[in-house]
Length: 209
Image 1 (cartoon, one colour):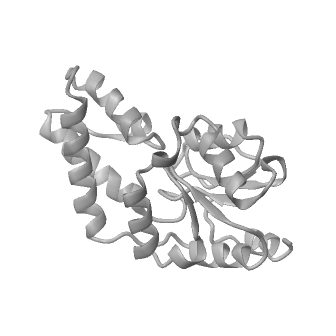
Image 2: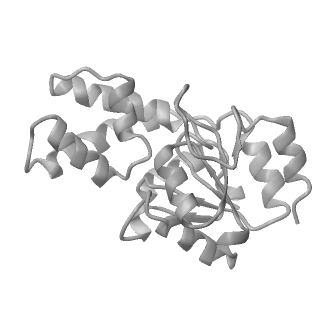
């Protein structure tokens, strides 16, 4: 069982949006749903590559990365809560099967987010963008997480909120439970839910193992 982090377990996506909006404003651009869709689910290097083109700032990858990371850290330091149902569903799953996190974010941000949300002790196996050469939508993060759990990807479940993450889980051959973080956004899935705080999901989790 492998969970995404940002926007799925922890309400960090809202914090990222505030940071991204601030970065866009700093460079003289508006930030809305179209711009958010361009960035959501991507690794920081992939997101910044998009931004250098969008802002017309070729060659400023390092500067934009530093600006974005500073803004994101400021927002995350203000606190990021576990999303509804996250602690309960992770606890139910962890009591029955091996669980992990696979995130496109840098390890320092993922570890901090999980700790602040009270999820770190339930999720001792954490795989991040720092651990692979290619992040999502490449399947490497999910395949690495499954390997660390000693699990067959074809018999494992991925929880995702973004199209980028869903593509990675699909490429890894995993069953895909999707809880979209952007309203109205269609995301690939085997089981589509509006929230982790879903009675049917909890009932399912209690049948595992």
